[in-house]
Image 1 (cartoon, rainbow, N blue to C red):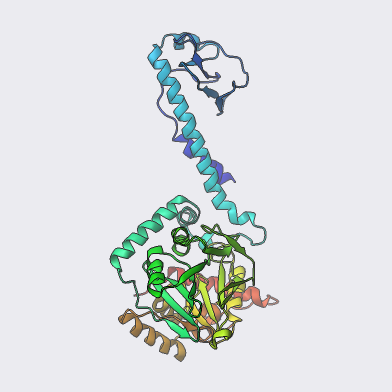
Image 2: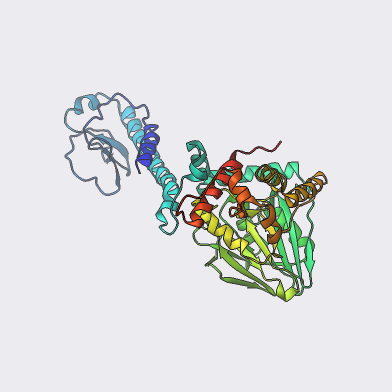
Length: 451
């Protein structure tokens, strides 16, 4: 907590506003209404402030401010009376109001610092998931920036700016989506922001639909209207604004719509907190929520059962798993992220993977650095490059494909272990070793820049 106190002190230090030269020192100050209509200064005892007064406490006894009818009058401790008496009435009133404003600013700064410090330590308070420095011990400025984005209003304002820029740059979306249709279900990728994907999953029999991570509410609403369906649910994978920013706007348009997600994440407009392996039924759509922390403390993925539609299952992975990639470890440990990735890897190999971002080309180029002689990876990269030349979406992939070239699902492979220079120590637990490999791969990916 030491950092928080330093931060608070610095913020409050900004509140040393200029005031008339009056020895505030170690005296207690009170403001009280002057019933006579004038001003006065009187010695005050070290007593509690009167009702309606607010105390400011600093290194010394502090001061107290009060409000009431008539004029505000300052009361000073012994020794200050002659100087205060020399001040004109207008200055006394001005000083009183200035101190009142200073008190309000101090209260605001203190509450803001408490909120910010709470953001720093929110994950640490959750004993279920051990805390790790953000982005695997990244720079201090990055950790501060991440907390401001994820836990404060500043993040929402930044998200709104990104939405506006993306709408101007990509009026038709950053990619050409490729819908998938089975008997009774339609999955529509919706390209939003600069590289995100939202999804609209439609039960074509009942025209009920669920939206996954509706980043841009206008883009999602446009598809809803085009398809002529009723939005029954929003499935939110995690709290980040680029995945949850459209929840509120869509709920205003669709009052009966429910918002599902983890209670561990501060998901906007959440109505139905979910637990691991809990099911959500919308028409004939049957989703299973899987708890996959690591990217955030409450990250969840959703698996659509494909059996009622005579098709494969579909995994909506948010920022857990991408085509040849995985999300950054912002709020967890490599061990936590490894367990979450194993949860995805344990799904049937024909499960369709619908990721939260279009990162395929960059992730595959990084994976090629680790496995130069992987023909499946090379073939996939060529296909992805051709898709991206035509601005076509690269999703879906499948879990079976990802196991063949995604380095974050291949920490058990000697090729990946050797590529990052990792050797298992004597008597080292197998999963602990794989977590070390995952950490090293993730660190290398964090600094990788595609040409």
